Image (cartoon, rainbow, N blue to C red; front, side, top):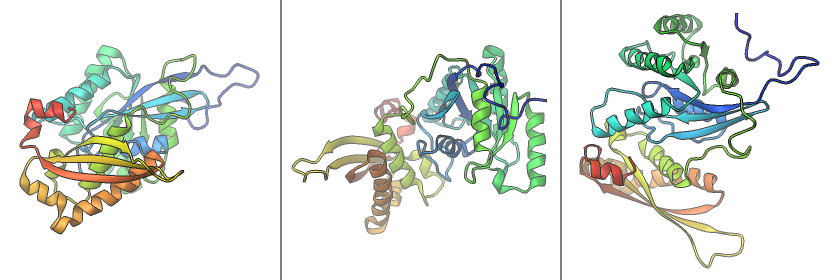
Length: 320
């Protein structure tokens, strides 16, 4: 029986402390499996976009979890899925590239959903990874708060039958159940290191402009129809400190473009009389001001980039 990660002592009485560990972990799973929410819960701060809509993560976002004997650097990826567009193919390539450069993988399987073809597809990909790199894979039964004990037990059995995992851990990021245990189990599989790879006060190495774009995108996705998340991209055009401000009261002008593929989608984002866009701006501004630690003036514009998901030149211009 493996030793419980929550009770394992940091050092044996009279002996040396275990070696410091640091490295990279990737959370993988089909879209909307709870990867970004778990990343945020582990880090303790919002570093990854979360949404009830699938396929919302577009960029590899690192969240850093510091502990006395380890530093766990989390890489949050898009959900692996059967691609229907050039964008989808590029997102899948991003996941596979990430998997080849991490020390441990957390495979997220939501407890409130039966294991399906998407999970089986990812499990097969992970078998190939283990054969090529011998990377340990931890199966994570996410969203455990959404089911009763009987359903959770059935889900854990199904996960066990799906593959040969280093460990299986049920957890709930929204309620905080076993989140610390997930961090400890992932960190246990990291390589030894002479010290942390990032300074203690760093939570993410994601550029500020990318994080701002993600906050705007998250706000724009709330309450919209299912087809829009795939068609929405956000680019921060400029960030300029406002001149001639009173002492101690800085203001940052942030200009952001929201791109959609069709005029009908533009109307959805803007809303009647601009009401939705104002709500998007208010929600995003609150998050951006917390991120930057100062007041901002957010200038939002919605533009149509026809079929950008299928156009290589437009994908490149939008950062994909």
